[in-house]
Image (cartoon, rainbow, N blue to C red; front, side, top):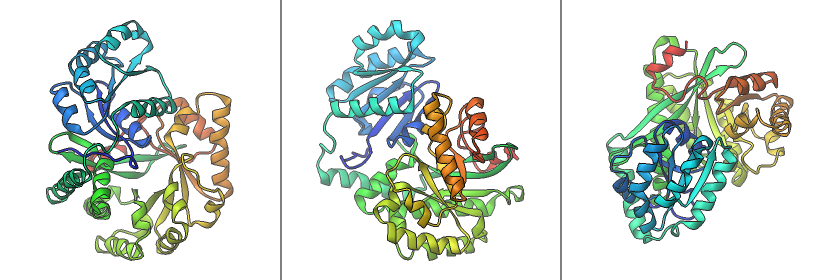
Amino acid sequence: MSIAIPDQLAPLVMLLSFRHRDRLAATLEELGAHVVAARRSEAIVDRFAGSGAAILIIDARDAPVEALHAVEQVGPKVKEQRGALVLLLSKVDADMLPAFEQAGISHFLSAPFRNSELAAVIRLARRSARPWGSRSGDSERQRAGEDVGRALADDEIRIFYQPQFEAVTNRLVGAEALARWNHPQFGVMGVNSLLAAGDLTGKKQDISARIRALVCADIARWDARLSGIGVALNIIAEDLLDPGFSAAFLAELDTHAIAHTRMTLEITEGSFVRNFDEASDVLVHLREAGVRIAVDDFGTGYSSLAYLKSLPVDYLKIDSSLSRDIAGSDRERIVVQAVIDLAHSLRLDVVAEGVETEEQLALLTEQGCRYWQGFLKSGAVTSDELLQFL
């Protein structure tokens, strides 16, 4: 079953990446896309046709021959469905570009590239693809309702954890809980796709509640050696508008004998920009009870900096695009330094997301970033695999 993503929601993108699937899928989700990811090209035509996506990204880096074969297979179907086929191609393989163009790509991006460049090519592809929401609203809601109902009933939501480390000592200090949707047809997907379906059907908070319940159950079962590890959990804007949310969440922690101080709730800038007063009341209650509050993806929103002085926030998470660009120009380093200095002036801790190289980590540490997470050391892992980082 597929989900058609309407205009007001982020684009649904299908990704085929032979060597970099997990990392690229994570990047696309950070950029705001809902991702159906694959590592093999088997049945790529049927999978794209059934995915509901209007954009197909084929990552040819380190696998140009396999990628060309996949484009030759799926190109006609993408064109038939008036979709967009985006190619990511290493500069060393640039001589193969004409063959890819003949096979049916509509857009391409030369690697290495920045996140901002990837976001730009997705925007271009979206404009040229078929209109979003072209299916009937009733059909969209019916499919979405079926997906949400089955996902909740059949326990299709899985929880993974990305380790967080202290920059100076490299000591494991926490983990961010990341939900994945184990779709019976398309495999493991980012949970944003399921949340988009929940948004269509009014079940978004039910999905968020199930994720919280799974995380709490995991922590309660963890090995005693992980007892000192904090856990960060994303919450949705709708939770912040629910006056009963804070009491319900604290009761859930108590039921599982989880110390309030062990938990951090992450919110995006957009969550409190639109509903500042309501969000602030909920967050104040939680923080007074010992739960820590973090602003996620800081640097990507449009919030007034004055809000940070009023909201009960404990730390900022530097968006991965800033972390990855820090090794670029002086201008980019200055931006990151300004964010870190701002946090310190407000007595907030800083966590850098998306750290991929030793150079990035060294520069972030030098600028005063205290904690980090990223593929340099680990992507998302299971609860049991967290033990290896102790």
